[in-house]
Amino acid sequence: MFLLVTVFTKNKLDIRVTALLFTGIVYIGMGFSYMAMARASDDGHGLFWTFLLLFCIWGSDAGAYFVGRSMGKNKLWPAISPNKTVEGAVGGVLISMLIALVFAIFAPEHLAIGRALLIGLSCAVLGQLGDLVQSAYKRAYGIKDSGTLLPGHGGILDRCDSWIIVFPFVHIVMLMPYY
Image (tube, rainbow, N blue to C red; front, side):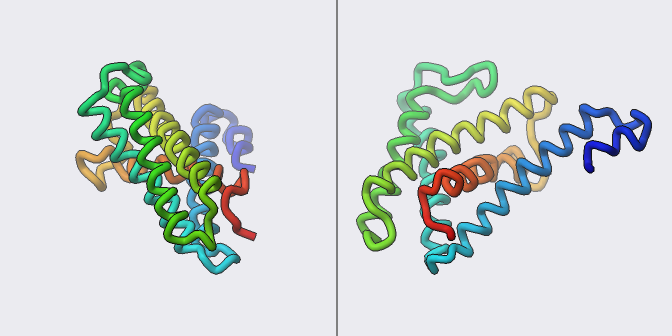
């Protein structure tokens, strides 16, 4: 129905604009709905799962930043995000997996070590891809920040870009219980 707006306005609203708006609604809406599902997990441990994913994502971001700053030499994808390095990406993956491992050690009744490592890996890789998607979007539209609410941080969407990719993926591939 949303895409029919172009037809009803007799092309006054460009199909590309409509498609972009539709993509944004699905991208952001689905991402945040899966976050809510994680928190409301039927296994009664939604807070555990939510914090696990968030800590893995944040750990990956911090690990990628600090490892990249200290040891980064090889650019990951300079056309999209010129400051990201391969070394930083690997550092982010390792930190995320370490955080997930700590969760498994302290709560083995909720999370096996193998599954924890898969979740840590998924959070890091997909979180970094989510960040690259946001960077590509900003480059395509020639903007530095996706908003002004958090000056110097790239906007709210820059703070959440990893979340809205990671949470749906972890649910869809059933790395955590939610039904």
